[in-house]
Length: 108
Length: 172
Image 1: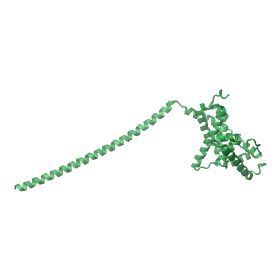
Image 2: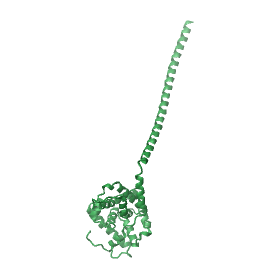
Image 3: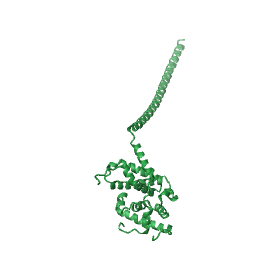
């Protein structure tokens, strides 16, 4: 193929596929984007610092939420224990009261 | 000469922006997308500019990466279900200052209807005047496959042109 002469059709195709001029803005945009990509390291550091700050804030909020839930859970547990202790105490007092009443009746 | 060559993005841009843009335009059929691809390709070149050994190496690299990025862009658009050739079909991809003949516009449009691999081979062959082994290297494909794409693509294009451009084409 490489040594063959081009026929009319191939010549027409070659003409149709001549290179088009690039838009005049192409070079400027490439150079601008290149300059942006090479911005001072301070921009990179600022972005990194902002990211770290957001991560720290999120971490703080999550930790605060966890602590709140944990305190509520511990409060509920303490309340349950107090209620159990009161029930046991009430039950014991009832028994003492019943025995005292029985004693009283036996002494009369 | 290659030893004296110092790669410089601005100079490479001046020399090859038309080539890169035209390859991307003919692969995608979309001026905006072609310009985006061209920008990305040159910025990618800038990242690897230290590895460019000679002007020929830079030109080969630009052709190879432009074809690859254009194919990627076409696939991304296919996934999104977008119509790839709206602009060329409407003639919007060609601007008045491009000064393309009516036959050229029709042929360019017919080229867009070919399968992607055949289109890529024909663009490199007739726009860039590359030989099958050079095309094979640029597309990372076997030479026999490229020759087959060229023959089939040309045959298909000729058949389409014969029925569509009878009034224009002589000896088709």
